[in-house]
Length: 311
Image (cartoon, rainbow, N blue to C red):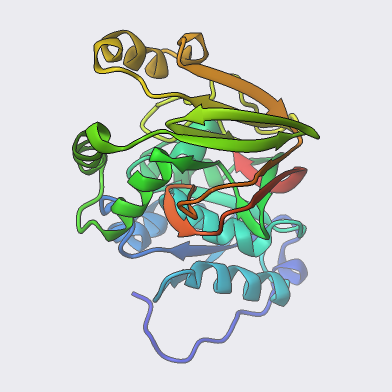
């Protein structure tokens, strides 16, 4: 097991000994999601092909520590890829530390939703995701900049942000925890009227929540923006008005069948740049984590700004 003593980065001697051998850093969130990550070192020892890959494991010790570790690793220049082990929030931390650099991202999904991993078709069991690393390929995908913050998968305001904020305070993660919060808060949450500028066009909409999607889903195979593509240079702006209880039996299945856009309560725009002028609640759901960002939100697509390992 890794110790907490002073850490020094390994020298990249692989280029001298074997030009084909890759050097990976695994950044592990030890309290992420539903606990799949707790045996990560054991799985690495039994699964990684040591003739092809050298690796180092580091554990995060506080909030956004993954961002710090990723930035340090990029600066050291001794790794071929940095692998985030955790949920969408943990992945976001690592992405925020490497976006725009030449570093490659890997994902071992160990969270509850795992939206970005699902969209990329990365295996959801750690052993199979690690097996993929032995012979991987690299793709380039977009990211979204939000007021200087990076969104790898999806961001949201309104009820979406309320749920993320409440989940941040919850002691238990997982689908049941999300469902409990949604059912508790749904009856009393009011729609808001939002002023937006979408690629220069000003619009006003009354919405229950609005999602700004790079990936196509929240997680759990809930495709909120079915037509979103990770490399098209566009943000899918999904505006959802309040869905009456009587309509839920018809609307809810659409989100699992990749046809949420067919609902009469959904309107979707595609844009390179979006400004929200009056996010009065100030909170935003960023890749599953509730964050207090501000009342004016500026979303911009950064096309193919991230290299990522895919099957």
